[in-house]
Length: 100
Image (cartoon, rainbow, N blue to C red; front, top):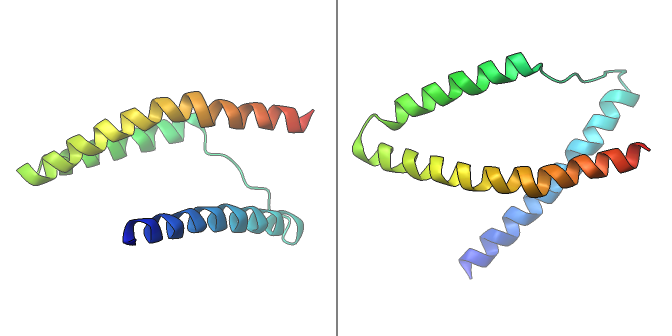
């Protein structure tokens, strides 16, 4: 029962987070004249590289942390390939279709 309650809370929180962020973005644009900008590929690559180095270094600090780090990296690689194939392609196609 606890597992399903946690899952329901997580699902509701993701839905609310997505909905409220969309509303906030509209408000920033329409009420405040703010046009958000994307970080450049160079900035993102640098941030990802440095954060990977920090996490890797921390992940080797002791045996338990190394075990957690290895599990995290395996999970990240597993969901990364799915995200690129599933969600990423869907979001790109939806964006293209909605802008036509």
